Image (tube, rainbow over the protein chains, first blue to last red):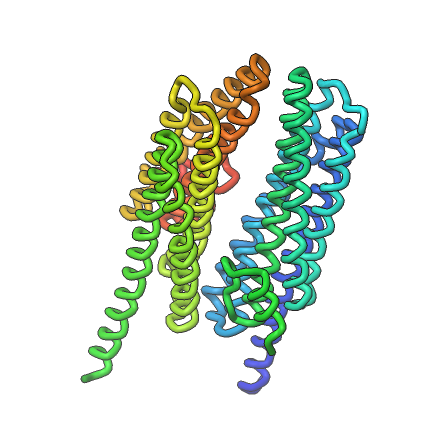
Length: 238
Length: 238
């Protein structure tokens, strides 16, 4: 083998490693999305067994985070990447932290589901959690899609939808507090619903973070702590 | 200049860069600690002006995060570090995310402080927030101390104290819910106190994360998602 074919070989291996990291992030994202879905389902259908599964499966989410983190650090040490490869690895290290926290929030929803099975079901069958949960699953999936496709314009759009989640959450909060004031016997149950809604709202924040890393990764520009209008501007720039 | 003196010069500059990053993290930590202190003070003394200051100063915390992050990425690209230098940079990238989130939680406490000035003060002068706030400030300061001194045994000890914060928070939660059930007119105020306590409890979690990064940094071993006993074990290993 001559030198150029060796270096070609090394660079193919290196690209394979980066591709592998990306795929593992997407697999972790798929697992986390399933966790959100199951946790919400467990809550609205009072399914104790499903809730327990979510709690047990969080260990897998944690293990994926530690494993991917380790892989990134090894690639950093061995390949000494620069430019967009370096940004990819930094973005992955941050993204998996948010995915892991999304997993934690899904676990909290599952714990509230278990708690709520011990209390009387509300007449509306937790309709507010169904609605918020659906929206939150969507933002998490879309955030991961923008990561998979490195689509910054979509990332800016998805980041914006987090505002709607915040509004819906605030609506639930007001509604639950009204219920509590009207009938203090529902305080326990309504507090549990508030905690579940809060956990879902946090998943929206983490999804927004992931969108911001995608923009950083592709554009090399940090858009955290800037306004949504600015995020949209940076995302469009070529 | 001969080659060895050039390389000596470069390595001195490089060490200076790493030292500079560490100092900036500690400065950011100092600012964040002040934010916790002022937010809690604003709440317990109903000091609107101080609360507004905390909210405004959060912009500085965010700017520090973005700046340090940028510096770490540049050093990674330029110096291509390995071993403990690489671990330092990865640990810093993670630590500043947690410091920034601690800043966000302090801001939430400040917002609750503003909200609470519009409501009647409780007879106990928010004694529970005073106590929890003091404990949380301490864990945040101690976590940063372990980072400054790279002291893994202290890091394991400090990580353990987060359990006491969780217990204290749960006690406050139970107490507030009892108050709400006894007198539904206090629901609004007690919910605000719950949100402030929750934000403080989250600061404990972030401080624990920082301790875990210190252990990773020094020992090269990831202790996240392991038990406190295991963390203590790893910390002691030489």
